[in-house]
Image (cartoon, rainbow, N blue to C red; front, side, top):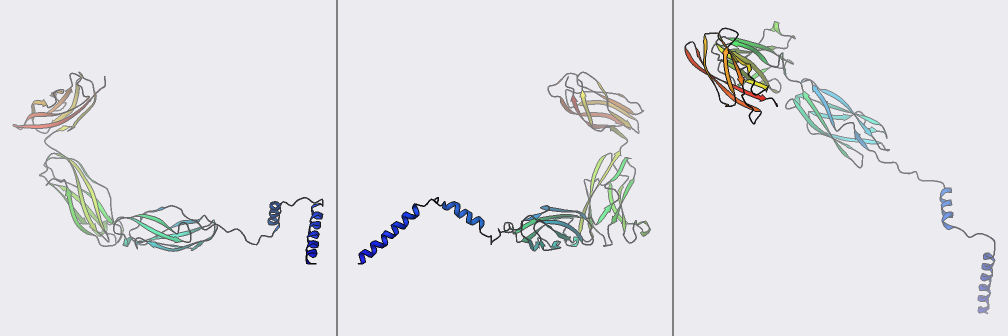
Length: 364
């Protein structure tokens, strides 16, 4: 009885399966069906937005020349290149002289914020400042970025001229030349030291405060920087550097060139001879001229370079001589150097002077 029942059920299943397979419907494409279901199903989850991306307007911000007194403020944009809000966190500094803060800590997607940079010159050790700020944010790829801030603090003093020039003075005569030094603010000025590099004994430098009526601005002292040449000067060309150390809130070192020529009772002009495109076999007249304020007579001239022949003749003025240069034949080297040793009688005394000569020969 049980066996018959099972057989009946099996037969029914087979008949039903035959009925389904025998109908006229097309077979189902499972992949196409699933795609159709996905497209028709309502979307319940939106795609995730990209994270914030921080971008500085520049990696190095230059504040330029800033006043030596009072705070200086500058602004710089910071951009959010991402699709989520950018939140700026702590901004740390390498030095308390340079600090910064945001006007707004949150920058919307695609927007920009403003970083306010503050520099305190009283906390800058010298006159040039290069400091680093570190900016933290919620940018997952760059949670910290660095910004270099540079500045030059205005000097404590200023000079009316950047050098002291005498020009040409006569040997044995005293002379002086001055420039003005002005304070930039009311902080007391202290002259710590004055050094003259390469100075002869007859040159001195003094810095003296001017009378208040000579100051350019009320309450801001000015000084006279005066170089003096004594009567013991000796002939020659001089280029001296005066190094002046000043304390006025911060230490400042000034280098002031002092230039002058002391003309002796006689001299060569030019003192060093340079001749270009000298053709071999051609006499170059007047390469240098010797003049004197007292009776003078040249008794001889010698050249240290055997390729150079030097002759002399009376010059256009009394007590003057003209010197001519000749390279008779073409040497192997176009550049010829040598020294002229000139012997002369000056006020009954024999004097020997040396003049350096450089000659560049023509190519033909």
